[in-house]
Length: 381
Image (cartoon, rainbow, N blue to C red; front, top):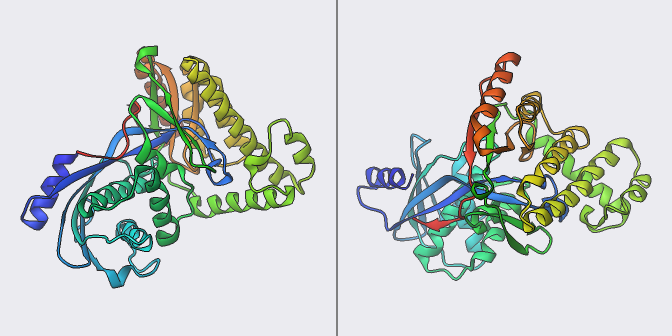
């Protein structure tokens, strides 16, 4: 991927780049729709990466090329003075420039070229990978003082305020702060992190990631609706966020809510936070195999209480479990995207074949399936 980015840079700008910076996609092992509720998540970075090759250029001007676009996009400082001034895929790049400038950094003009093998629209955080790689490039090119622990918040601001996507802090934290061989236990309120050992190979296990290839059905509007319901529920309960409702206090909290739909949404968030904490405890104790039932319970909660799965997703989970997966769940915001399954390493092909066969039986578009090991976060390459 680094070579592809460099080739794109050389062919587009007729000179070599000053450097190359990579950031990974991510999967969330457990903890869905908890991030914007100030809760807990447990993502890990994928080997799939977005790479930015870049060099400085004179003046406050930025030119960006992508393998997926026929023409480059150029914008100036005047065109990133407010959200939404640059649109399309280049908005993620412009958003990073804007967020850096808003934070008082002297952002260097730059030429950039992008290559990526993080699938688009699969719920693997391709947008955060792009933001993180661009951010790393601009920070290094400009010698900017921006510690790694502060970068996720700035990248999130680019996506929220400039692009207009109401994401939480998880994706940017994962793609920037993850370590190889570990999952990232993130407290989304305090942004405190703990790197939790997640050595699948040592336990003779693997994570299968199933890209459902399902079209995202009403994802943006439904995501926003779930978030608004959670915020209204927290207000009704008199707490800053649903993270403040304990598992022990859940029953009493549900009794105070106005309707069944709201109760189901709250039940998912509260029980999902508890599942994250239990998963972390098991992993700290070396019990990787024992987390499977928690993954499966998470999926049932997303399907029944949060109502964010689709038939392709449920079919993949059911087929993986029937074929011997220790646990399986949808990962990502929902309404399409990916499933992950925890499987014995010697069962990966059998489980993948079972999922593919189930898709064929239902007449679904064949899924894309790969194994994933926890990879490092953003870094020069």
